[in-house]
Length: 292
Image (cartoon, rainbow, N blue to C red; front, side, top):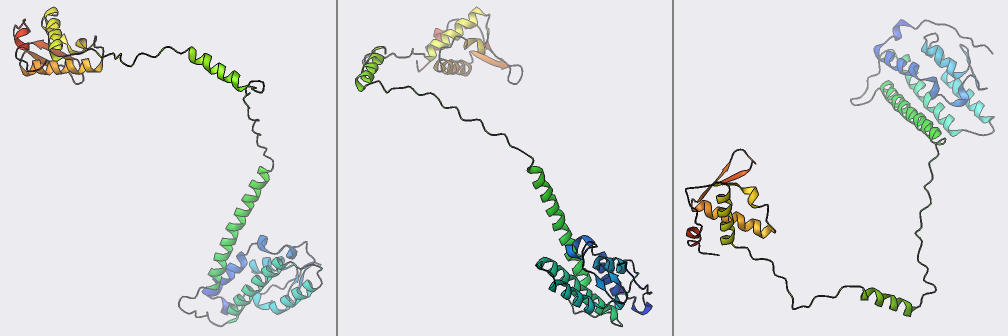
């Protein structure tokens, strides 16, 4: 049945700022939030003096200011909806809850529209229009998130994970035909292949390196190279860390006695040892040492 409506101009005495905000919230209600059985495809229709058609079309007309809500009998809309659900074979509690929420908001907004002046609210009391807008925004966010999760679920249903390959099982040695005596004989043959252990009385002592020996080595190197030698060259023939440490102590001893000087042209560069004076006989230095 085609919808019919009577276009009425909005009374100027009711155009109040607070009412405009309430009406804007009501007209902003998206049709996607209506119950499924209240769309054009549903058999439920609203039959009023000023309107005859689906409930969502009624909201569209109010949104376009083509229908005055003060001319809409909300009690009659409620009675028709109750009559409609009585004949249903199965009730949908979600649809009923949605209708009750919409109807309650419409009653509150209409009651404010009929008042001659704006409603004076108590301090801290929230405007129903603002509350409705906040609830609608929250509902819209949850609906968008639910839609995105539904799309991801549908995409994952078409995804197939690669199965892990079967684990590789190492082959074990079959010892079912081997006796304990066979194992004992195998151990004996393996032990026989081991080298003989050295006697406990034989101890190999590391070579002894003294500061006197390293001073002689430094003196000999200075003579061979014209009184100059690089510190790194003295360590090229070192056989152990102990020999390196003793060589370094010998250099410190010669430096302390002003027999050599250590120079370094740049940071982290090579250290050059230079003989001071003409000392060629290292015995004069060695005789002054109080240690070996």
